[in-house]
Length: 223
Image 1 (cartoon, rainbow, N blue to C red):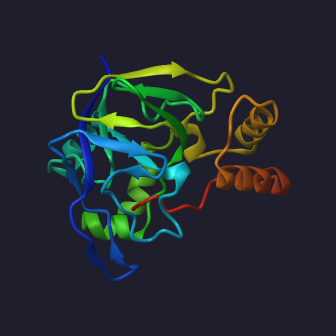
Image 2: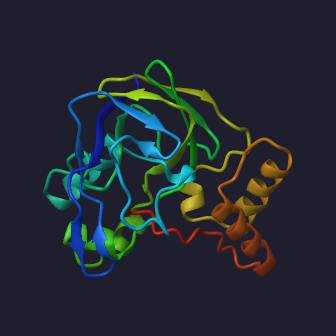
């Protein structure tokens, strides 16, 4: 059964030589927390120009991918280390289709919007030289989600995929997208099958116009 293993929110704001201060230090909560359109109650984003907002309200990362990193790094990738709000098990986060909806617990309804993009803050958090490139090569970025229906979430809540658009462009594919995926997403949005995050639409349009196959979003994605 797919489930939430941990629910994480900011523990402390940390100094960061790149952006001044960062809220990437997320740690597990012991009680249920309310999730509304701008994210978890009590959570914050230090750099709100690049992070947060309704289309990046919640960040999910799979335990299965964290385990691979643990093996590779020789250290535990504990819940919240990557700045995620939800550590999941049993749901294919990399294989989630953009626009896919998850029911979490009794009421919370989330919609997959885009992959997380690594940045320098994330690399400094990990203390691993070349981490951004290494994370990109792995191709398991985790997913941002918007809140379709508010609700409470706690560790142990079941996750059910209740809707999956038929366009087939997954988080993993859009992390390294080409013009074909850009066209597919734009067609799906134009037909009303999916609501694209504005940055995803913008870069998909640029990819098609340039014919370069570079439809990537520029949002750094680390909060």
